[in-house]
Amino acid sequence: MGNGTRGPGAEARTSLRPADLGDVEGLLAPVDARLAREYPGEDTTRQPVHTVYVPADRYHAGLAREWGERARQAVSDAGGIDALLAAAAVPAPLRPAVGERVAAKLAAEPVEDLRVDLEDGYGDHGDAEDDVAVAAALSLRRELETGEATPYAGIRFKSLEAPTRARGLRTLDLFLTTLAAGGDLPGGLRLTLPKVTAVEQVAAMTTVCERLEAALGLPGGRLRFEVQVETPQSVLGPDGAAGVARIIRAGRGRVGALHYGTYDYSASLGIAAAHQSLEHPAADHAKAVMQVAAAGTGVQLSDGSTNVLPVGTPESVRDAWTLHARLVRRALERGYYQGWDLHPAHLPSRFAATYTFYRQGLDAAAGRLRDYLDHVDGAVLDEPATARALAWFLSRGLDCGALGVDELAARGLTADGLAALVRQRARTTGATP
View (cartoon, rainbow, N blue to C red):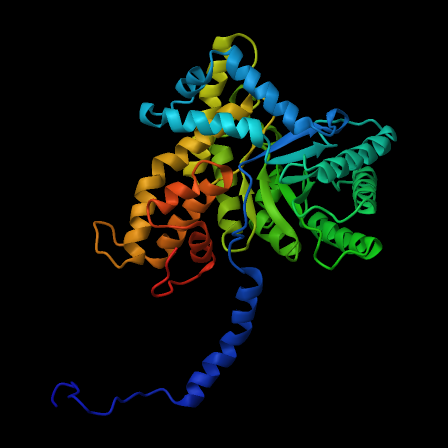
């Protein structure tokens, strides 16, 4: 055949020898191993939609239930569920379903993740902190035994900077030792390391976890921790490299999440108090760096908080709900599926905004995913990675209570099928959620 074309049955010719391919494999084998180690894939387990911070001396068994009661009372006092939905800008067609689900959530599971705060929210109480840390562990153990514990719970202890290092580690030790003495550690245990100013602090925290595991008879790797990103050094190192990327690596698989700290970070940059916000350009930059650094590592992300509390007159409460709901929606649209809540009256707007986000996207996401799985040509050509993202979107909606399994079934999908698709890195022909 002319012009280099090959006719039917002709032998295909190549130029690379097996030895050449072997050399390539040899060159890239260490790279393959490093990528598998450092980028194991996303953590596809349930992620709470928020973390509630409570000063340690105010924490007691049953606190989450009390927060739910106070949240429902706040809704009643500010004009009822319709006033909440209007303040949160829930579209009229979605209000019946969102309102019903928010009310049910506040009654059944008002807090998904509770953090007993022994750092900024608690202050410096010297040796009195010993008793508070032990009492917090005993209260959590009682909640675990009675079934009242939130799905995720833990403590924020003081940082590993020199002035607070000894106190922070003692508090962590007291809490974990007391909790472990009463039984198995909860699966949803969270340990929060604040104010990281050097990667070496994360490496030290990893060593602390190893030593505690050995002392408490825990399996290796059982203890993981969150890192709060609230200092410039944790975003950008002195050499110009992304600090959060090095933080994740220094954790050697123990860093489970990065939490943005709105006000400490803003203040450290010299931003005036009146302009410190989750939507300040400086906040967006920090969170974008966090997002890129965490992608593919299995480290989850959390937005920070707003310090505008829904308190005072009904009008003031509704105004605060409007702000909070907008910030929650903004974070969700940017791929931040978790944030901090500081007051019981934040819960209604958190769930109203979150549920609206998932319910607004339900039909489009389910339809596109169903078309992808059925190999139906449509107006949008989805890749396997996008199909996985669609499944993950729907799974998150199920986890938090925004969507129901019956609604998925009506669209030809199941929770187990979604979970299987989320865990896949590539499309499996004929997969059926």
